[in-house]
Length: 334
Length: 271
Image (cartoon, rainbow over the protein chains, first blue to last red):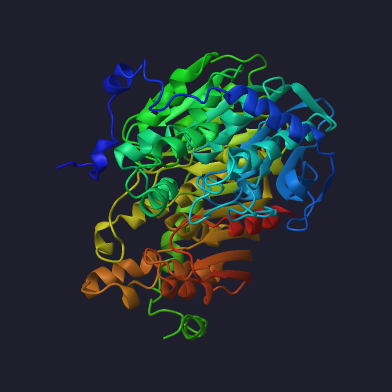
């Protein structure tokens, strides 16, 4: 019997991870991946920059830092929201782009404040339509049931949810370049799970801007392997639903997995140029370690991976503490 | 009972805990004990805006550990005194760095985590030892040379929230206390099958007995689906507070972090 529902299927040892050092993923990268994204970025670059930054009404004002609402116009007229916090400082400061896990919204203002405590500004964007602020313009072809991974999967790849999201992230990067008091040589990304996937895509597609990336157990990776391992549950459940209801006998599998290739974190990896601090919990049953290996092995930049035995898809304090030095150091060093 | 009816009932529930006659004296002694010895070891993070330290207090023949982060500089800073829950260890350094942003120093008690269930076997948890550690740390922390003694905020979740209330109750002047899902409390109302002897001891650990002593202001968050810190225990605490107080109720949350409450805590930090 195919015993794929035992969670130990996902649990791995450091030796097993080492044995996967050549593993690059279960599907090939779409041949036109880079040109596809070049066109998408050009589309995002055509959108006129319209944004507002104002003291948030959720909090009183503080002397030491500013808590700000950042709203900007995204693709197709969508409105995107981000928390923006910056310390009061005369010198140009680093800025962290923070991306959240799936689904949900950017976490509390208090949680985001850690980067401010490190002398940095932070922008934590809410992925539209996932539980935070901002408005996704929708209008996908096909299902959007229980999963943004499959949103738009029956239409053209350029209309998929994450394609539009990465275009919106591009627009955000253009805004960052206009912000006052920010040291453009020290723009970093940080994210876990979906945030890790978005962080990698952001670093890949905006490699002139992003100078360091801290990525913990990235989501949105190696979709076919997720499906093969039976990990198409929880955050990946959209794959299970799509498979059951829209491709029950697997006849269309190659078509939809290759379409998902355009939003696969492992396929963005080779375009990342900045140093990457990478973390994997060896008991991760949401984003199986194999799928994280596919991402890590495709990175051709400076990189360092930390494995955390006994940790699943959960807060890993020791990884968060590594970010302190990785981001605070003047020059990037892993 | 509907949620609305449940909440209504809780609003007038004060628990069945009894206040021992020597309650205050028993706990106050940890605030006034002969000055314990304090050793500090720097943790060399590269953050130029803050200093990171491991603190070790030796008192009554035992070591009490804490993590401290404070803004780099020679000034005096308001202090967040932070306590962790029973089922988890101390928070990470990156997590704690959040308080530097508002100009606070932060000190967090670093105790063992425990898998014991206080509702099922409260007599097996050494609350006395943990409370003594929290109070001793409090006594040391508010006297640190870089701390603005009159601007203390105690903060925690679960048992950590309980300890934040304990700490605030023992500080003999006005402080702020932020507590999410505080426990333990109301052993007599919530714990079944515990002997009267044990219950008499547990009255000393009933956080609701500390509540009336707090001077200052309390911000409390209650998750109504909480089965680790039952809302009954939490309201028993809240309803015994005599100081200025505010409560935020989260009907569909369990024993978990609440982003919205963290935002409330942040506003609360503003003087």
